[in-house]
Image (cartoon, one colour):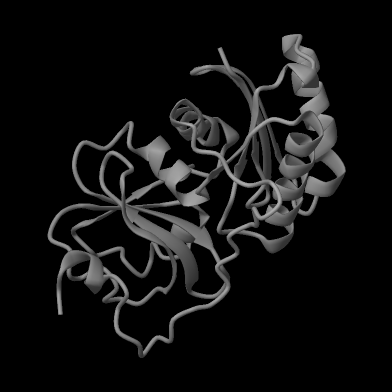
Length: 232
């Protein structure tokens, strides 16, 4: 049974979890801005001590790859790479947005999911998935406009801290449903990482880098959503 340490540092939330195969053994979450560099190592040590494991018993490290905070991602990925290299164990990357969609997929039977991470102003990092968190459109930056989701005919679910700021913008949109209190979490990173571990999907420790996704589309550019739904 693989024991996997999972790290999530893409936003203000610093989250650490430990999985034994598909079982979540423990999870620590700390919601303090700009604290990851100070608390992450201690959280890892405390979590392992709580469940009675040592760091040498780990079989893999899973880490949230982004998009998200530049500093947070750098700290999380650097820590994961250091542990994986030192312990000579595999490292697994998980897309931050897909992990958020995975959590919501437990509550949605039909529709399109748009996890959103705030990127200041009316900009977000988002991804388009189906109701089972299967990726339809990979992570991309989006400037929110009133017409951004007009082409969709079925229910659309928006969630994450990026969705909070657009509630007023879409308050009269009949197809848009907001889901509250969804944020990046290491337990969802772990759930997806287990599947990758079973399939032997690992990353090269030397070349693995965070997915920062800095660039944004111009508001005048073609709506990046239309390509994924086949509209010209």
